[in-house]
Image (cartoon, rainbow, N blue to C red; front, side, top):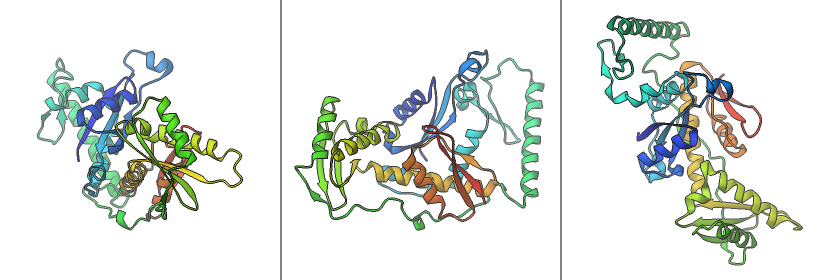
Length: 315
């Protein structure tokens, strides 16, 4: 699994740094927010973690070669999200040395600590790990290292249905409106209009297609919403407008399905619920619909827009 973990003054900067290191576009990766910067008075206090940390993983199917994501990757990402971390631990990770007990200590992080302090910390870590194993045994083996939960992602039905019977529509009013908007944005893209009995379908390609997508598809969703409003204003019959950019929507849906399955495995294995980062209504729908087909977990949404998020719980 190709991934990068980066810090930044905010989530956007951390994601950008990780994308630059991986040499990938945002629609080719899955982003997990591990830490968010402290806000308000807390963020001004000395010693506060006033920065963001993200884990950016390459999505295999975006490169054209689909491969199931392992449970180990999912658990590692989720464990990192729940475990308090520091900037020093991240910056000097490559300088860590391995100890006989399987734990690591960062020399660069605490160069002036006495050895006995390091030994005491390792002892506390061992005790904490042992307590975690004991709790796992008390729960009947949940969370036992190496335990596998098998979920066949190929058997899960997709939320979106294939758009069929499309025919080219060079006079498509929705496509013409979108072309005017992106031209005023100064973008270089090609726009083609199609239609069938149910919808107007617009396909966008070109050098600036990534800009049309925006952060996690936010720009694309806004353009689609605006185009729907304008083209259906005063129309006798409503006709839905769907805008896609080089197959982004299908890739994004598959990425969300993979994320849902990974987190479901983690919830079933540990018995602990997981709260996802805020998502738009369509992405929440994909998560709910996917996990309805997975035995052993249930989902709900909490919070208010635009910060509403999905919570995955063990049944």
